[in-house]
Length: 344
Image 1 (cartoon, rainbow, N blue to C red):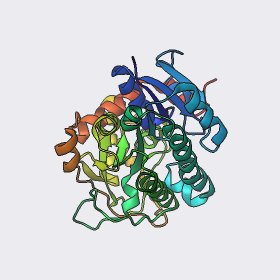
Image 2 (image 1 turned 45 degrees about the vertical axis):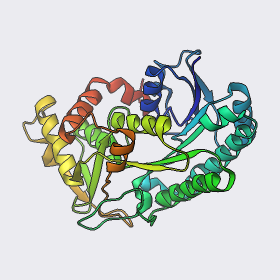
Image 3 (image 1 turned 180 degrees about the vertical axis):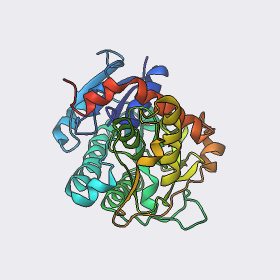
């Protein structure tokens, strides 16, 4: 029999990648998503079939509906991707981040705990609640060092503070109630189907339209980039192999500053979609006022996940993964039009 898992936020970027991998591993996947602005049926429409993959439009703030889902499907596990995740939006409107990331996670934990308490011993032991988090909960790094599973939390934005709070709730539900939870933290994701507000897809779209390519400050802020499919495979390993109460970090071993990332996109587009005026796409880079509280550098040491879970990366080279990503957006303009509401 197929194991039935709840995957929240799977109409979004990372969750939809994980859902595809879960399908390939023969799970029955119940996608639970509120379809807020960054969640789109276009990300999952080809896998939702009403049998192996079922979609339920439910908001994590609706606790009674979550209770109904657990009773209806009898889940063997939960993988929680649902989150508000854009730092700029958290600065201008933090309320939604507190509601979704903190209250929503609390509701999901309580619904899961209530259901888990009714299971037979064997099912109780096998059940997993995996919570997907971010490296931003650790704060900022200087020029050296990397985050790991033992790094202290020091969030600096409303977004990262809300994710840190949700991580602490998940940890507490394991230590207090025994709910078998696992937490994962990742570095910056990139790849197909990323919502267009994020750096890489935004730069691609701006370049294709001949618009300015806005880069915060002087572009020196550094991120470690992991391809979304590599991250999803790490989450799957943690879901299937990690012990309750554990946490694992997943990174790309690909540190680049923001200006380097944008210039790499420009070089790829110069080859694949050159400007009609003969100029390089890089000519449209414009430096703009820096983000408030902009963390300087993130980087992840994921050697523990490699050692204990067997985690490996398909995309060993950031530039290879970036070329694949740019190609996907160039060949899927209809997707971009649909998710931004531009389809005529």
